[in-house]
Image 1: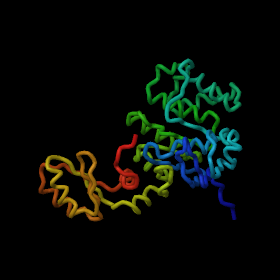
Image 2: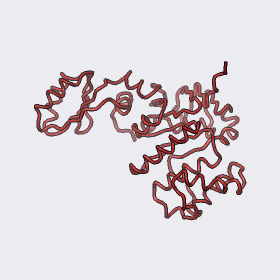
Image 3: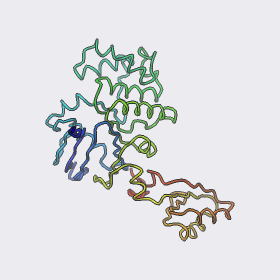
Image 4: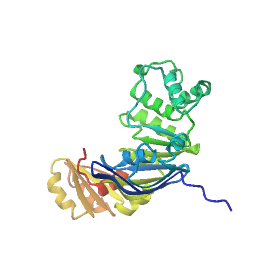
Length: 307
């Protein structure tokens, strides 16, 4: 009988404070090899700090971290040698070409220039940048820069990638291309840890997600299981003239009603009464859809704006 595979990341009792404020409050996580794990939460929830702690880029106040079999932060350098990182903001060097950015970055891992240059054609093909090796960074579009940052994170052929909001600021075409590339990495057996504010992205890519708020993990599991556990299966979005007065009636037809801006969200196990009633309201515009990860996220963390 084969022994179970060792977890790629194990975090237990993780805590971190800044200026007397605890921003990571007893976090426990386990990430299996070859899965895409989503760490989700509103701004200020503690996601980026948690990732920095896991990478050994900050020292925890308490708790234990094991990354790819290495104790962190004690063996952080050894762990990072097997990890690729896609930061939230691109940090490409504008003084270098596309290829030179990859070569210089590869040197941080102790790779020699010959081995790095041998990988460059493969990395550029993977990132859809074939023929751009000699291009200057200033000539690249935002999508190209993001794909180059992903290629750069792969220069050391890592076993695991940390991706901090990898598609922020991209148009839908570029976002879908990066999703396709990330699925390819999962098929290769790489482990991905993803933070994102795009709930559709997390729902498409992640095997499991953890939702974090105020420094704590408030739930974790597979997206579909969590949605089924916490949210009614049907959602009807309603807006238009007269929606305020209709919303009071909607509360009698749905299990739960919430308001966000000009839209009323009605959650129900059976949407038939809602839909029948809305047919008699020609001025109202409505959309009936299944519950999704964004509904779960908003139910657990609230609809208030976070800065």
